[in-house]
Image (cartoon, rainbow, N blue to C red):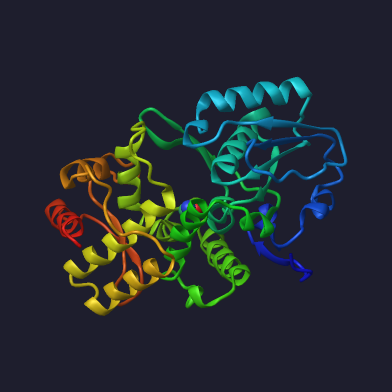
Length: 345
Ligand code: GLY
């Protein structure tokens, strides 16, 4: 543990602005972050999180199950019934304590209950701290696809409790590194040279700047999906397949390498830049190979089904002007690049 003071980064969104606190041993300060007008707190978490603040006003704890399957409309229904039974009202607070699944689910339940109750996040996973907890994207999966139902609902505050990362299983940590790796190409330079605390702060600053300039993903925020077009396709193919055990950040890492290879194939970058992508992804100990059994045609079909495809293939790609959205990419070029990735040693 460190006695260093916490860092505070504001996400500037007018009257929906909020602070993100980054540091160690922040749980004791959580009550002072909650507005005086809040009389009840619904804490949403999972049993394995191992972090629970002591709330100084009436509160109830709601445990959701582990894993992506907790992101369902039935979980939202169960939470909203629980909120109603505890008498949570519109001036109260839903407090998410956990990683991305918890913040997505608790945020969407808060956005829906009474047509919108305040919510806040104590982010305990690296992925939530550098990405999922910030920016107000909340939602759940339906059988037709991941994150197809949700809302933009900004939190009132976010706490990045760094001590929680010390007990994070190695695989979860690496999953966060997958999201972190993308920031190396979005303005956070030489992240891998910094102590973890500074890496989290640098990523939060970049994320905040994208959200501030484009809260509802009209254009610029889409760049945060660098590496995600293939990642989402991999996840969509794996969704519901209990034999495929690839975490989101791991899929993003593969997606970053794929995006670099595609950008090179389209003449947007040279081999040196492709090498940069391999260096960053390797520096976080992440794999770059497609999961076995995922062939190029299946992945291209999944890309067309993505809710953001609008009938053509679009990717966030690197180039001389930095990363940008490139639309209407020929599916055969995508297929060839997937085969190149598949055949890499
Ligand atoms: N995770 C991408 C975004 O928040 O926009």
